[in-house]
Length: 109
Image (tube, rainbow, N blue to C red; front, top):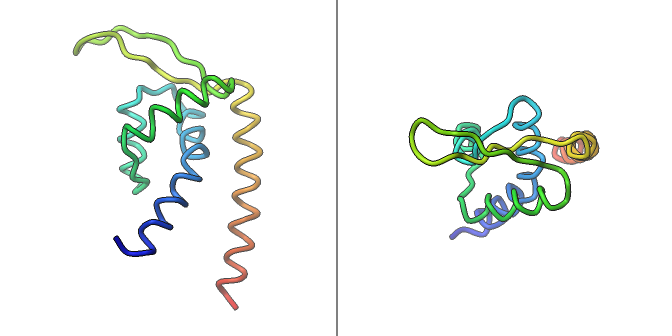
């Protein structure tokens, strides 16, 4: 593994919470749908990273879930953002934009 690959993985992991909240602001989603949306956006994530994060975010009150029947098998757990999660998303989004501006200004030197 190249040194930059580990750093990229750590950066992605740090932004994953913001990305999940961003997706769930638009629609409730099943965990497999979340993984698909992240992969489509080149935000690579594995189930072993996603499930503990979803559980932690639910325990912190940022997400809730409900079980929905599925035509393809057992009921599925659909996650949704809470009011507290929306407020947290706004804070994270603001912090990301500030960090992005700072880093871009330094890269332009």
